[in-house]
Image 1 (cartoon, one colour):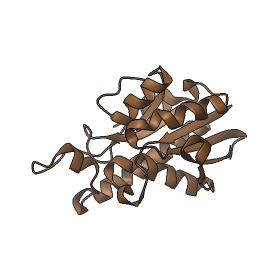
Image 2 (cartoon, rainbow, N blue to C red):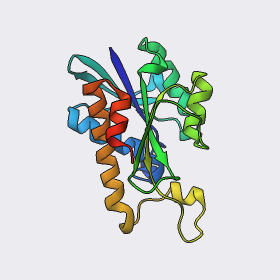
Image 3 (cartoon, one colour):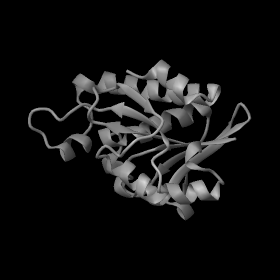
Image 4 (cartoon, rainbow, N blue to C red):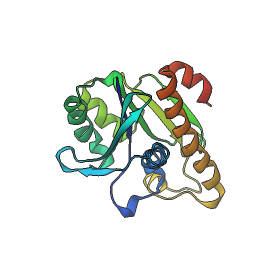
Length: 189
């Protein structure tokens, strides 16, 4: 069995460690923990890292399209690896949750998230597992765009870092127990 873990974000140094790139930050931590190295895969417009955990193949994917085109990178990778949406877990930011909070869901709508909209459009399906990491709402009249493309301020940095650690823990727990509902019960909230 194989699991594909996709973190959503935008490519390039300009966007590194912004709120919108929290999915990339989770995957970087996972790669470090699992001793995997990302490589640019030009065929699939993604940075990928793969290895085995408990005899199960794990593929980490960071699309290098922009967020709103994430499905362009993910769909061909799923097909190439002979996977289905059931084998997919997507990690991304959610501004409707407090910074660092997690919500694991089996499926659902895009909820206004452009990366998820792209995945649903390209996959023709919204039945994939998600790990949403809260980034909080914009403060002091800041626009949503400036909020999601900005970095965490000192006030939220510790909560954001804890959310990244807990999201990586949730992925590792799911890899070990192969039960997304049980993992959700453990990590939600």
